[in-house]
Image (tube, rainbow, N blue to C red; front, top):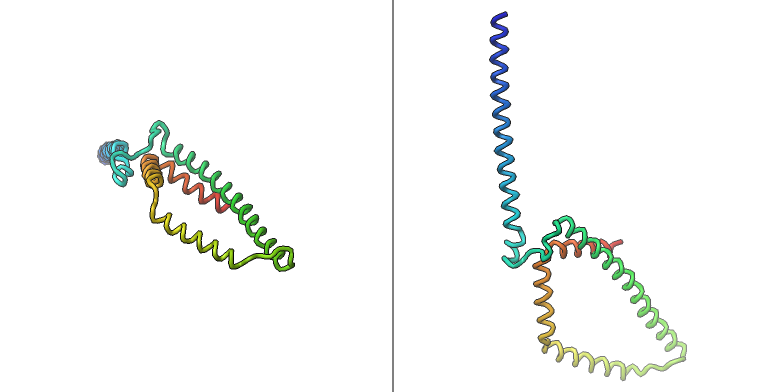
Length: 168
């Protein structure tokens, strides 16, 4: 019996050493995880991608909230864009169809030479105006780029939601 109790005591000591060792390992892992989360709070991934001045303007909202807001507003915009686009395409296509039917029936006469002349004139005007992009467009592009950099999380959610809205 003495030998059994000695073996039992040795096993208990080994179990307690193993339990202590497991606790130490858990605490060490927890400390590393906490250190990693603290590091992540200080060094956001978008700071490395887009520079020091980037990051959400409204940092009082969590990343999940920003994604949800961006996704919901993007879905609404995409859904409306899809519906309005279908109506516009139907209206333009229907109008062209009616004009062609009226032309073939003899109700209207289209001077195609004049139409071609006007289209060529519009093409020339577009070519000259595209070479002289105004500073307003450059300013708008710069402001848009800065907004996207500062609100990368909301923008990402918006783009995803917009694509889902188009697909639904």
